[in-house]
Image 1 (spheres, rainbow, N blue to C red):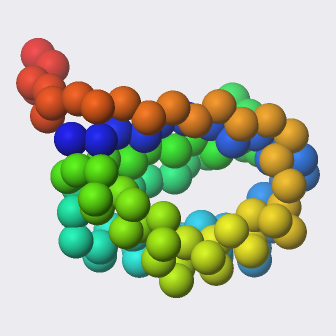
Image 2 (image 1 turned 120 degrees about the vertical axis):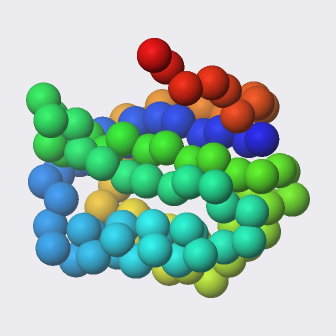
Length: 100
């Protein structure tokens, strides 16, 4: 399994168009073959920071995601909202175990 976690600190407050683009990206990504989970959230302590969490069945599924039409559209949305900083990491992992 491939997991991607990270944060994106935007250079400005998330506007309605950006939020719409993110929601469209999440919905389209979740519908992809091989997508196990895909989520964006805002940091409660810093609403201009996005938190990203993705899980993919394998590298092939992640590669297909990177070539998707909705990824190209999302990149346009994000280009209109340049980030101030970004820390995104990719991991190869197993499915883990429930906590507790």
